[in-house]
Length: 374
Image (cartoon, rainbow, N blue to C red; front, side):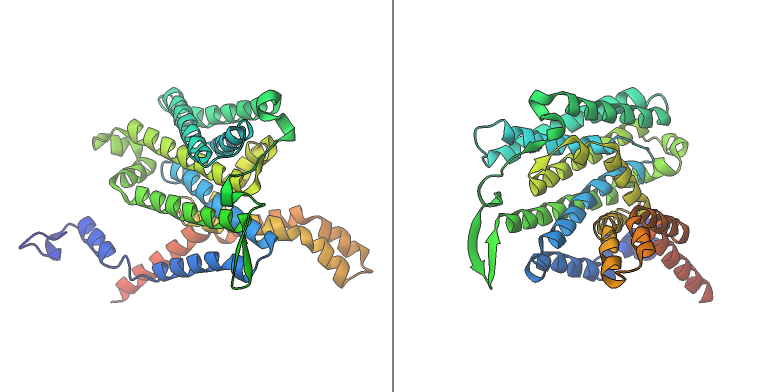
């Protein structure tokens, strides 16, 4: 903000950059892209009422939240966590168990589940942070991995509570019940699946905006300073431990809320779909593909993994339909995981900073070249 009698030229370079950022915040092409993306997400169930398409898009929205929350810890704070899926699973199981062990689903169960998930996530995040960050960063990774494995084993072994690998099936209350059928609008019948989809869209947007606001706040800027050079941030007087703990707690809480959305969408939870190591690896891959420390890269990373996971296995069917007599081609098409690995290598090779990180780097270079040419 410019004080009376003060001009932009009186600002420091950092203040000038922030001033220009505020002035152009709502006129950038990125804002228009975000509005169009939201409109597309809202229109998909109406234009493409296929469950498979809705399933992929809903999971992209959910994992965008989980991956962005992981990016807060890894990309913005510089702490490698190998147990972020644990918080995702805590959220999913909180909703499933609260409803499953109740007489019938009620609306307040959603709030109870959110409260339980946040409370457990905050306590666990605090325990992990206080016992590992003061020692050495590598202990944070080891401790999160150990706790994640323990939680996975606990969910498998404690059958009376979690039904182990059989999983927990449950119904949601009111209009979120998949059996609910509502009025018809424009030839499209509203049902429980539609309602859950739009609820996930609304909550995902709110949670994502909260994370964007978090990284643009003074706290977020301090976290970036800690990530880039922790001794210098300490020398400037910042209590780096407190900021790191805050980031871990905030990111873990967001991941648990993402887990609740995931459980709502599936209506079913088991250890393999929420707490297993492959889920953690998927989250890590999504962050790398999108770009560390970009937040918006979580959208690209989640979309890339979920779309390839869903449609690459169809290569075999396509090969059999197009080339029915070429058995060798059918055998090659079966190995879709191999092609997934090749795609990942190509992405890392051509986009070493992830899609968004590499794009930002290119834009930054062009601007620098343009300034030199003036």
